[in-house]
Image 1: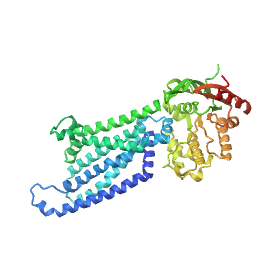
Image 2: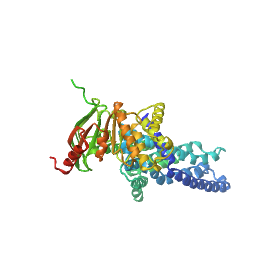
Image 3: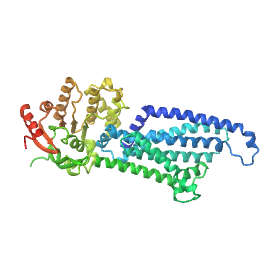
Image 4: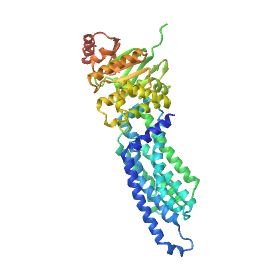
Length: 251
Length: 240
């Protein structure tokens, strides 16, 4: 019950924060513009595409690029959404109040994580509504779109877990956001050096977030990719929980 | 055979920021008793109260509530303790009513029970007119009253108040004193930490004085002059 109460409390706080609405409005407008441009280009290329034997369709040229754009934005949006989750509580002194209610650290972390996930799910659904509305006319590759949506959702969940872990590590929300941004970008491009050297398939490639997302955006659902996301999310949430538990011992 | 005290602090120590904030503190409190906790800034009052509320763990020693160890049963603090920390931390995005509901729910009350308790507390602390107002726009005195209401909402048998009269006007201070005595008469144990000696004289049955993390005085309350003499003696080092 306290997990549900914690989630509802955090959702309510997210719902009344101007930041959440501002981010939703600005990114929504940007994504709608991206979708309109992509759709216009796709419609304009219909004649040329019809001449190709295995031409990419609406899903490849409009829907998946839109989700990729959402992932790009999420590197900025998710740290902003999570930065105050724990750092703000610690700074305001309300974290101590939560301790006094006997809540276990994992319940606080998970409750806040679920609340952010609800917000991110709504964000993803609103974005997805655009290609779904057009794809319902029969032009979409539903399997590929489902895999890409799964990849996007898992990426958002991973970034949220990283954001929460960073928020648990400090009492300054801006520092938490900066840390989350840097760690997320590092995780995205950690194999860049190896790629430049012409090395592929190593540990760094496995470690890179982009490796696992790209497969899903191509429509390939591979269990090792899903395991990577599960591992990254679990690790970040465990770190957040451990850091929070240490607060009661150290502060 | 004497009954064991409701709150029993046994040799509790806690280091903070590299120094002993509380050192070997032993203290007890019975139901219906109001204990005034005095001490100069940095004496260890807030650290002690945070440990009693379950927000900090002692480095050594035990805190027993109704004979059960607080560190072994975190749910004990949830059900038993109501805590108003210094400066009444609140969530600025939530309304007065949402605070009371959230605290009652986090303290394990059902939704219906939480509604009943929140309504009772809104009436008791005259917060009804402010119920929809966000905590972020409340005055300091109103914030303090809301913090007090959050501490009291689940009718805890142990009430811990850290500087509860901060920012309250004289009428509200009188109301606070009535409320503390009312809770004690209902069987709650109350610990009230303050800098104001008159506050202790007005509502407390016993007084404990902390100095440099150690308990230096624990006795039934005498008159104001005697308390003042004891307090200043300890605070200035005149009393060994």
